[in-house]
Length: 278
Length: 238
Image (cartoon, rainbow over all chains, first blue to last red; front, side, top):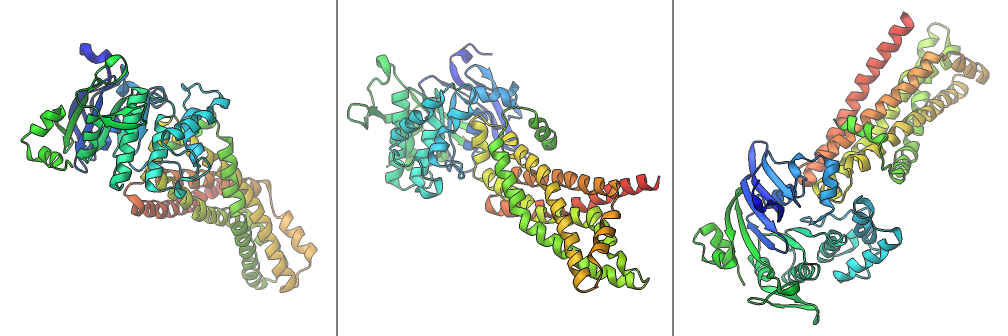
């Protein structure tokens, strides 16, 4: 086990995942550190969602090891994984809100069901309201997911993912299928969550613009909006937060590096994503 | 594996009593009208058909015996189970299948809940509780349906009909009639949940899972009734 294992919030070590003999992830290795943002780019079917589900222990790798907060997820059973999962927030691709529950019940779900989250019953509603205010959905407590627009559902799902204040948050294509304005609002919320709560962030996306915003903008808590951040120290005590870009192709990690390195890459597949830049 | 984990969860906390009550309402109260209708008309048809056969032997008065034996041993449990399979096994497959393709099952696991404990075990407990009760109601309504035909069209004395219907039943018949719905309930709930939880391929996959659940549960009901009947016939013969 490498020495950096204890510092890494999440580490993949030669992870391979297959479905019906087709490799969805092939020999993938990387490590994400505290406070770091990782933007994972790739075409549809390149293994981005599988990577996030493997990080959460929802998918077991065929080979290799996955470490989250120092625990080897591949050796844990489902009940043991619940403790680790309580430290990881996940936004699923379409939000995955429970359609039989209203928004209040959806957001309260992790507080009430995750054993390691010790939340007193009288604190549940205030925390739900706080999480919904955070995503600017304060007046939707009694509404059902089917009564909300696509963007509002996505924001409610973000509230559910972060209500327990997990140190690691995984976002699976949070802007997929949304109009540019709503997509920008969602990414601004992600930046706000990252900078206010100091979370480690993994963002899966097909849009380079999303990664560009994550890498170059920060949340200004005084003005309540995001602003350009390149070259400025971020986080508490001037701690520099880093954004690393990863590119997946057919389950293989073909690029890992900074935004500048990504933009300089000659690989036509990688260049396709960078050319999307607006 | 699913059956083993679902049964093990019956004895493990947390117990989702609200979900069990909700499923009992959906499966039990919701299926009551079709169970009553099926029972009534199958009893009425049995009385008509059996009286025709019995008249050849001058035994029309034994109609109550045949109606009650057939209903309690076979038709009541099997027809009620088929109705519940059609309504609930397919319903479970489509509900869980929709949850699967919209990643709600994954979300449940991510948020600290075992989907088998939350979704499968309550449906299993509710079906195992409600199907035997529905079968008892269907049996009684079926015998009542037979009486309506016997009294109105066959002119059999009510007292004779009910006394022959009652006296013909032995403990063996009642035991068989109660064991069958309990076993069928396992098949209906587990098959519905199994096909639901392994759904892939979007809405088309949900439709496929629904059909597969209903067909498989129905076929299994016929196979299981044959096996149970064979066991009871062998015991009675021995």
